[in-house]
Amino acid sequence: MMNRIYFDNAATTAMDPLVLESMMPYLGQQFGNASSIHSYGREARTAVEQSRKLLAEHLHVKPGELFFTGGGTESTTTVIHCAVRDLGVRHIITSPIEHHATLYNVQFLQSLGLIQISYVELTQDGHIDLVDLEQKLASSKEKTLVSLMHANNEIGNITDIVYVGELCEKYQALFHSDTVQTMAHFHLDLKKTKTHFVSASAHKFHGPKGSGLLYINHDVQIKPLIHGGGQERNMRAGTENVAGIVGFAKAFELSMEHHHEDAVYIRFLKDSMLEKLRESLPDIQFNGDTSERSLYTVLNAAFPLNERSEMLSIQLDIAGICVSGGSACSSGAQGGSHVIKALHPGKSLVPIRFSFSKHNTIAEIETVVSKISEFL
Ligand SMILES: Cc1ncc(COP(=O)(O)O)c(C=O)c1O
Image (cartoon, rainbow, N blue to C red; front, side):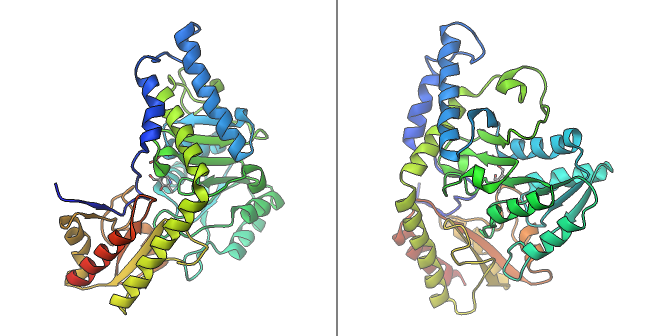
């Protein structure tokens, strides 16, 4: 097989061999059910609780505020449904560029007549308009949940969730943030963010798929979404995915250990790609903000629409270069991205998302830019 180049790390990342190694015992000899009281069960329980403790220390929360789930989508679904069902939320303020895990859930609850949705305005470069958010909070008459992601998975823009948390406190709204693209990529002090709920997912930082985290602040009490057992202190029924939980914590720990040098290196890759694309294609544009207020892992280029640019992601795939034409978490279809549509309504540009990890190299950037210039 030809050597492939993987520039789709916002869709998922390669699992770190050390993460796999940490998980192996729980897929093999230490296969116990964490709810069993015998020695096999106790081994599994210890692994789960040690993982929770490690994460709680890093995130500056209590272990009792963290719940393991089956991924980012499940964490977000739990928050949105339970906030409406258990906390009397009747108004959800969100943005048109959230992940579908948020948008489809709020739209479903709206279709049942249970809530009203307000979509916060975006600025020119795709940031949340914080003045509009405050106006919407100030004029909200009903119990409100704000659900805004920390960083956008398609364009990379980062929202100041410390400030959003303060606004929510001022107007007594609940605050949920999808931190799927930022957890273990940035230092997150959840106490400082004044969030009530946070969603995260291990496979975005070299951990296993199907392993998620949900933070629920002690001040809020919700009932489980999934019933059928007393696991996760009665919050999430179902036998714990012990290996997945151990993998979550290990991936998190490894990411934070090398966080600074990895972040500097990956930002260098992103900036080099941006510069090289500009040099070889003077009419290229970029979706979202490409400055410091964006993920160092994501660069979303907008190519002028023509017969060749329309075929670009397919051509790159044929050449062994894996990128995303929007968000691979959803359709992956070129031009079909709800984020790009919300950002540039009516504009005909071909968006391609390049997303990097510590495994990428500058030589790969050079190859990809030269292939793109060749195709176009
Ligand atoms: C911002 C964001 N939220 C949520 C999700 C869903 O997470 P998961 O794949 O763990 O369900 C993704 C990607 O998959 C994402 O990028």
